[in-house]
Length: 240
Image (tube, rainbow, N blue to C red; front, side, top):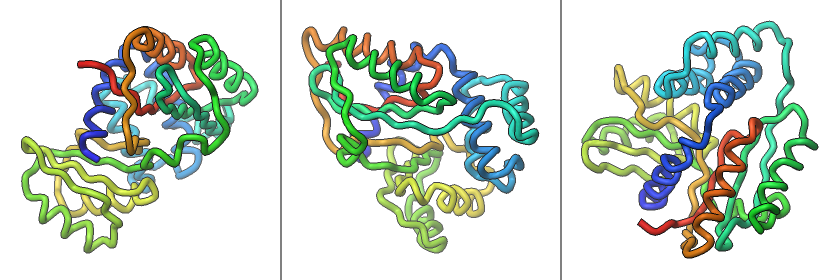
């Protein structure tokens, strides 16, 4: 699992530069988390995690506060999640997660990114079964036994724990996110998460080579330029 996650981190770094609307992305996610789970970060672990991630990504406080205030007022856009699956260049598998106030527009925009790069958008569930939907937490430490013990005491279903170069990484099913985060925060005072998120991790990888490489980069750029796209997950393995 760690190897797949490392590949995923590297691909995230490559595509992060293309995501020019990071403030908008966090604004939508924070708004949705606050609207669905409450506007108090102390009582809404998903919201607290998002706020901490946003701050680490240097999102200004006023962007965060505006999103929460909008959720408090109950006004503003009514976003809903949308997920699209399919096959990208080189037949790699792709999942596109969106938040949208207009599903028809979003589907048309995402489909265009697929068709313009000779890719194929599929039906729901077409490739999701080839990914693990995981909650991932990474933080500095070297005592994985105490971490495992704390999580077991909290009745968390732990998928995997890795300890590498002074960094402990915990993998659990996505449904265990809140319980896992709470157990770690309660047990390890002042814990500082370097990674705190839910992702789709591929079970296998697909090499993308030759002419498919620039097409793959164009495909990601087109998706990342769409306001409604929040995350793009894939199993593409590019040459070093």
